Image (cartoon, rainbow, N blue to C red; front, side, top):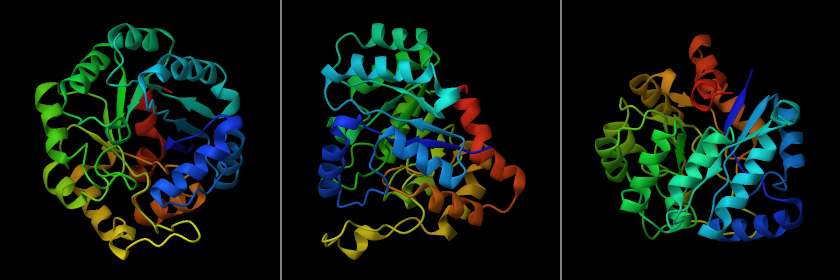
Length: 282
């Protein structure tokens, strides 16, 4: 079994526009059209059984609708292979009631994206959301580290993550992009060994910008396989989740890279599906 713990899709009507906009903003190539059907086709080609969708609310008005859609998707995920988390925005006023509603509707976690939401992770607004989400038994997935399209400020640095761990100590706290995109040295030194999960999304493998984009060489540098192996040894396979970040990475390629890096079968099984099943309750 394989579970991809970090994917994104968009409604058919707007997917093309969203993908085009994000490709330009992030100077990052999309490997699918960004729709549910395109992701399912990618899953079949890669041999992935379940993809976990991570919706991002870029404003507070989107929260309830995106969570309703997540509940609808989860009602049929055994047939579709697509399981969705919920979302929350730091400016959503009735966050406590909405998080309770998320849990009551069978959604087992939320995605927070400090960079897209323009608020530091250790801001009180995020802290109280994380605290309430923990009270509701929800997993919390964070876009950790820099964002490829927002390089002027790190909204989810290792220091900010450590503040959350000190103040709240969440049990199911997932740091995307191997704990912090482009911040891997600090993650290895300060966060490996802590009670957090790291997902592998958009960290290993080659970064290929869209056609016509000129991206500085240093921005293209991804996590080396040697450093990934060191982080795996220090952090443990029981705290790492396979994720591709589809459509921003190719699922087939991402899966092959993980399999080439992890040679122990038990460790590989944990990373490919066992940890995700435990964290997200699927």
